[in-house]
Image (cartoon, rainbow, N blue to C red):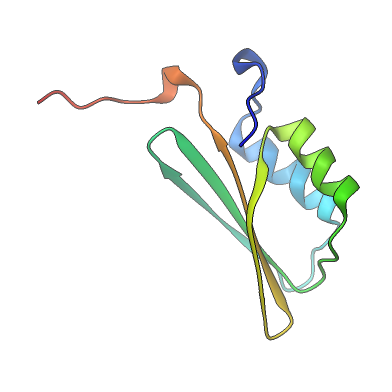
Length: 95
């Protein structure tokens, strides 16, 4: 996944808005947010996705999120976009 300047990382809700704008897909679509340790993912489900390298590059440059997985089933495409989070957001548990 990409590493961008940590101080310039967009909040995840702004990433979601940017990605929907770039995908230009609004009908019958949805998304999920998952955070695992120092990695966060936005998972987009869409029925109108056409692989576009320029769009994926724009998403990467704007949000710092890379396409890490893509699958298609019954006309729907699921896109997993992920990035590493800021160190200050990571919470450690004392043992």
